[in-house]
Length: 343
Image 1: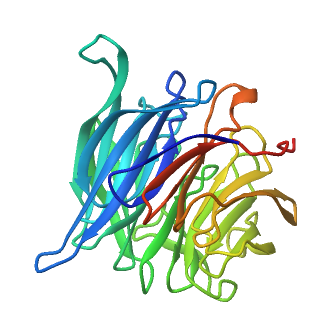
Image 2: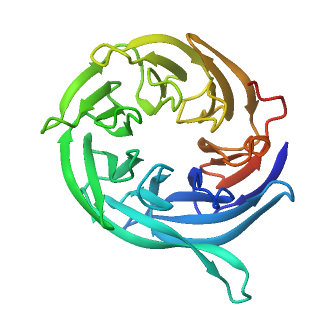
């Protein structure tokens, strides 16, 4: 069921609902637009929206102009700081913004973003970003194949370490939420890797070169099962891994979704349900249980590359609200699955 939609001010590549209490209605969307010519530039923005599914309302409440953004992430609920959103951008910067409540000129409550800190981590582009569970560190994947760990202490970003992790672009860099000393990475070199941050330089715990036939786009650890991890690839497969043996993960099963699997998001309260962005084939809700995976529902009302997807948090009966975005048509949609969400 469609709730609302709008067009952004650039090519849309990521959407993220705020997970923090009192801000579940806030949706962040980011853009990346390449301006070609004699002096090419990469521009972008972060837009904040107020989402009210009951009244089918999607209201823009704040927008900031930035360098072109490839990825954004809200700080996790269990972190030591309030709602922060981190961006990975084309200028090689990591920037962190704080969500603040405010009143507009008519004294209507709203929200805005205040930049807290930034750090130029590389002359290469920052392609992906992820918080550790305590919101004190960020893992960043770079276009030159490197990975950078950036620390956030007392509102100041600083590079704690970086290393050459892959041969090509790193599109996925993700902390293990159950063992945050581990970072998983995936790249256009088709290698799925895990690094142990207790060693310096970071030591490789494992590297799988055989399973993915094309580049790896995303890596997501199950929040409810410490042994289950999912990967998405340009080869159009969502793969399920058992990582209980961290030196030798087991590839349990895979399912073809008909398009490159760019993003994977677990449902906030249904443990086995994931939302996927499938590039040329829209979006799919997939049930993953043990070594079984099946498509529950698909959504194909976007006219371009499906890149951004997320679930809204909140009361159980309300958290089946989904936001999705597509790239070249600059489209943001908010909707709910037509069928019953399996428990």
